[in-house]
Amino acid sequence: MSRIPTPTSVAEAPEASRPHLEAVQKQLGSVPNLFRLVANSPAGLAGYLGLNGALAGGRLPAATRERIALAVAQINGCDYCLSAHSYLGTHLAKLDAAEIAANRAGGSNDPKADAAVRFAADLVRTRGHVGEDAVRPVRQAGYDDGQLVEIVLHVALNTLTNYVNEAFATEIDFPVVRADRTDRAA
Image (spheres, rainbow, N blue to C red):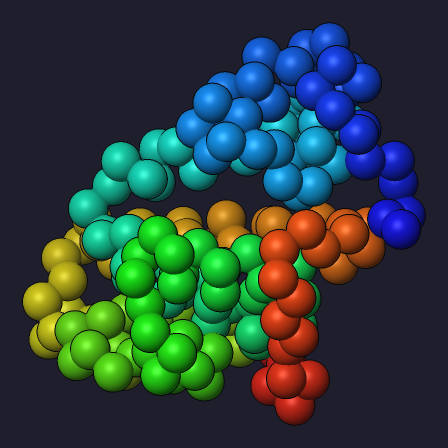
């Protein structure tokens, strides 16, 4: 059970959050617990969905976004996000089990994506304090300045949801995947 109430339906959420939750319902076919929990703050839900939507329209491929989400969730020890992104990675981004394992370990079996995921993992572990030596391999892999910014913003977005879920113990409503507790941010 979560530490703050999770509205059991769209109708039970604050009125100002309902249109956002209805849009999530239409897009996903359901409203996962994370969205309903964040709906306690209509401004928080609008902000989260706004950034999420804007980044979905960015230039990073969906599979790379899922890879980054898996790496960030593993490092931050967020079982909710690891469960959600394992499901989404498998069913929507079509990542196989070996790729998901590589992502959770902070890399990728795809050489270009590997640079992005390693950079994302470095960002989490150092709390953003990376140097040119962390940026250079991402550039060499073919990512441009805009994509570098998107990687950082995806790390921030996923860290945001990791913190919400961990702070409030969001009940997992995906097939449960537990984080390996040996790989935590310093």
